[in-house]
Length: 248
Image (cartoon, rainbow, N blue to C red; front, side):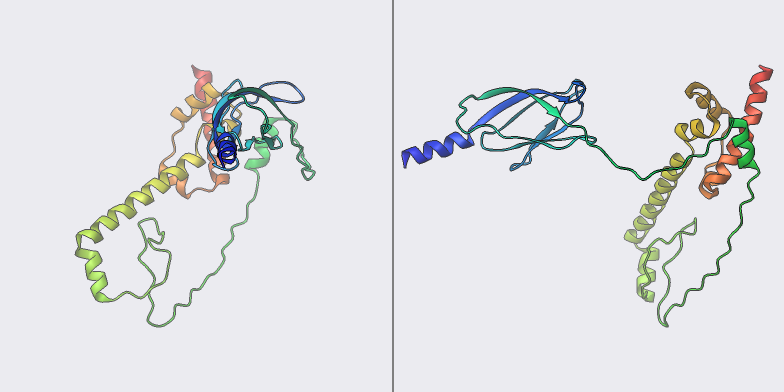
């Protein structure tokens, strides 16, 4: 019994493992690798230079995972009695097979710009009719036409009065307004930001920042405009921006 308890205690004794993770092919350090134990799920990550340190149970297995590399598993030998280990992990690059893509390039940016401005986009007007069963009502719409509650439900007069005049009802409406404003803000930031401006205008970062200060669109326009409309507006604004810069 005493021997068995000693073996169990030995297997569960904590050990410290430190070292670095490198690319097996290039020997370059691999930063931000996710490192976790298979059993207890405790973990850490490598730093910018690929270094790491972690304390685990001796019997556990250490998993190394990173985008672009195959997973690597590390398990120590049962007869190794050390309590501190230093290791160098070499990770194999993962090969991704992608479908072939045909890319047609334009001769110049001005030619590409002309093609965009000359596009004749059709306007689609799909007719839609909604059949609501008798006794059911649609939930109220928000200020921007969005449904505050995306479900069809029955609503009695007492519920309506409660929502209209109760403190809870007022707080709910405030919360919905906040959520709608937050959602709109995220949409605006995703549709008109520095990366988008650089991609559409081909301006360098400093010039793109000046462009955004000079060419400001209203949030309401950005919300309603399609990506195509916004790109056209940016290109038109770019012409005026270049004229202003040339005058300076």
